[in-house]
Picture 1 (cartoon, rainbow, N blue to C red):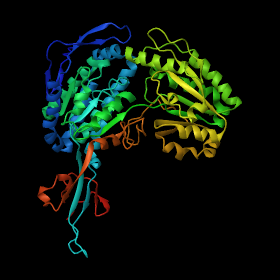
Picture 2: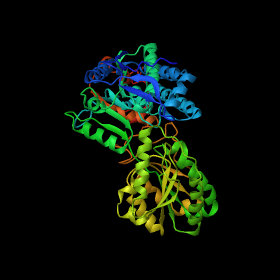
Picture 3: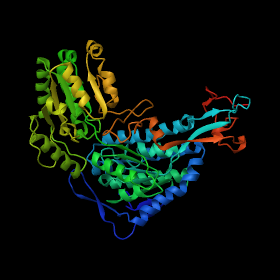
Length: 527
């Protein structure tokens, strides 16, 4: 059995006072696993934040080459976590082996992707305007700008992705790539997983010669508020519920020094079914959509929770097939008992709501989630009923039928911010309904055509964000290389002697960066 200390990671060491108070739970059986974890006390929260602060000055000035080597080293350590590790993750989450193996590859791949970003150097955003001493009527001084890490970042591990959105997940990868030490609050649903991944990060830090406090992690309940309030913390990365994200935003905004919170919180990811597509392939769409709804027990932030179609015989036929598919689904074990409890409450709210009809799904009872299909009158959405826009985190979707294009437009305009929106259509549909695209651009971070949102590619172009309440800040993304921008800020150097400038801004361009020099992008030295 792997050694899991259950102690906090602080400044390169481990810490735990008193007796361990928390246990890992087998998500499938509910049995207590033989791993115990300490509850962080205030002194340990302070020590973790201070360790990150102490490491920041050195870490942000480490060369891009060495920082990239650190990220690659983390990736290597993650890849070397073996079958015993995978088994523990599966126990704590009830996720299948193939899913965990794939997620481990995604997590190490994220680290390597950010290593490439760091090596390339464009994240520094170098802009140089050389002096113009002879300019009339006023000379121009020499001005040079680049971006530095914002400071220590508090990251909150997510429940639904124990690897890719947790200890070594996208927020941690982006923060470290930006030069920001991390203090991670481990998720209570997979603490043994977090402990083993934390050890991998520390090993990579030691191999790469990083400062001791570059990565820190604390366990326990009720520690988030103290962490976000700590003056050393300069930004927050969060993936979780709307209530949790909103609470963190409030805490961060009420600090003596307010800080940004980049929270991914809630989305129902509307799918718009266009008439030609339903006529041509309604059976196929129903089957594919049902599969997307129940994938991973519906525990994806991009789960399609709302389906909108225009009234027609084809929509009726589609609905009947969708009912069959979702009604025939076997129950699924969710990540933890808390998630199942929230799912049950969400289903009960819909069942008891006037204007909402239950179309398919077995009674929600026992220890597994049953797939459900509901239908709601469009008037509820048009009249601002927020229950229809509350995310039910699990294998459930809600169908809305609109009378015509005008009602379709009204329904989409009534939606709050979302992570994604999907258009299912034939070429003639897409041409006829191209007017939907600018409308949806105002509502979401990613628009799909003839696909399903439950799948987020980690790459340069991906946007995993959107207007509130999908996220707390629509200007960023938590997936893709643009995620690094959240943890950077610009600094301008005026009239500096070349020898005193950071290397990225020096005339000789020793890092070989692509830079905006006097309005022209170039990687050439300045002489």
